[in-house]
Image 1 (tube, rainbow, N blue to C red):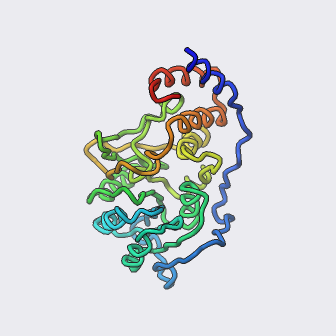
Image 2: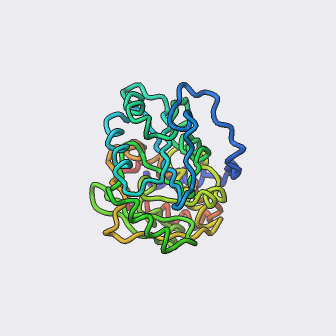
Image 3: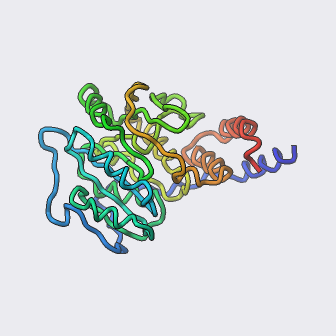
Length: 295
């Protein structure tokens, strides 16, 4: 009981903070001046455009990801659909990451090594550089299935008015698929995956804005809440058998302390205007569900 009372006290000390505004004018964001090195096709004035098919922007952020980065890059090159651009943001790797990037530089549209403020800052840098009609994220630990873009293009053609698409993603314990937006009010289990499974129109992404750097562990939850609840954008999820990507264990989310993640999720709900009483009931439910993981 003392554990419960201690955590109830922590919960009621959470305050609805004034939101840090997320800039919606991508073009006004200055690219960081602390670039260490950069390269890619754009440096050679090879700029891709929308031709007869929509250009896709694939953003990969990496920090010491040399172990799986080559497999990640190759999974993109295996796609039948070739009208895409690849942007890689490295956060200061000290392993062989840059060596791998340079090996594939003729197939990478732009890459840079910078001193960023974390994974969501790197996402934002990548988004400001996007030129495609759709944006997606491919984390360096993950990979696309060979027919990922074939599945994607079917949904783009059949549902042109949708702002975003969630593709099915295979994780170590099974397949996440579908899209259930009504669940976002009490659960984050309403979609498949951020990496390899989330595709959003660039014009729609600009309505939502950039990732909020106030949140260190779960800024994607805040992004999705703004996208679905505040901006009321419309999306669709793929079928279970239409697997877009493979999400590997051991990435950024697996390194986050559970209790930090737990309270930041609650803070995101409060900051986005959900009732503290309602969020308290979510807190109680999750407290007992994850009792052994909470100190």
